[in-house]
Length: 164
Image 1 (tube, rainbow, N blue to C red):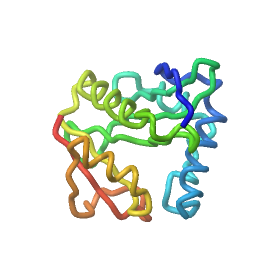
Image 2: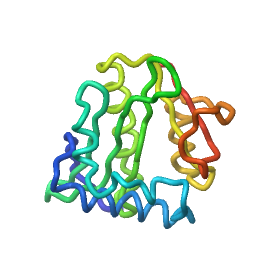
Image 3: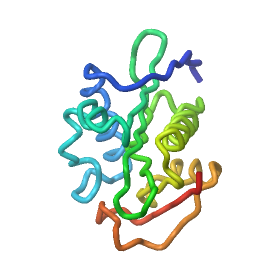
């Protein structure tokens, strides 16, 4: 397995095409290039503008190799369904960069950012097809909850929460 020297930073406009590819490729490779998933999220064309538009409520981080290739990303956004709750969003890592702890680092960065922004808990909507992500969330202390009435993506079938 190739070793990666990774740096983490806030998203910038030039990351948009790569992030859109990572999201759509990650979903498609797990049979989730379907309505009701982030695959068709209208903000995918300009994730940077979306996440930078409410700096006190949301943020997005990317993982970048030493040669400047973006290989992952993860965001935090306000979650309207529960008071003082953030949502962890769009955690994706390039297939050739998996297994190096990038997703775990991004999750922890998003949790720290959520704390900094004043959130008390963090919520995730995901799918049972995404087994590696579910294992990661479990290891990081997220617990499953029943589908809440405020769930946004109708295709998602796994809902998790963690107190920060």
